[in-house]
Amino acid sequence: MQRSRRKMGEDTADKLSDVTIEAMSVRDVDEIVGIEKASFPSPWPADTFIEDIKSSRSVCYVARTKGRLVGYAVCWLVPGELHIGNLAIDVPLRRQGIGSRLLSKLLGLAREKGVERVTLEVRVSNTMAISLYHKFGFKDVAIIRNYYGSEDEDALVMLLRTG
Image (cartoon, rainbow, N blue to C red):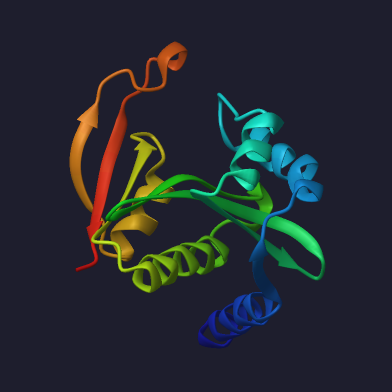
């Protein structure tokens, strides 16, 4: 039993060593939209990603492994704050540390820019994401009722103070 656990851990570490984080480009949008549609009941359209890629206040990253796009993150920089708008990992590759790598990249950007806080909203049903954010020190600060409109689902507002 011990041996198989170590092997699994080594496999995950090997996969993570292949993961690169780089700036998102318009060429990535078709692959991103595929992951987006598999990840969320109300996916962002391609135009939203293109607008964010081109916006001076947005920072957008993709995660790749062996050249394949496997995840992405979109955040917005406003005075004193970095707001995470979207973060998703390809469904079969979740729980392998890719989300942690993307989130670490965003938090590194927050430190580099000297922002005081990092904020986000997450579906209350998305326990996997909430666990990840808690692991990084985010705190639950509010519930926004019916945030997601037609799905009748609440959002959990989370905050990480960086200063």
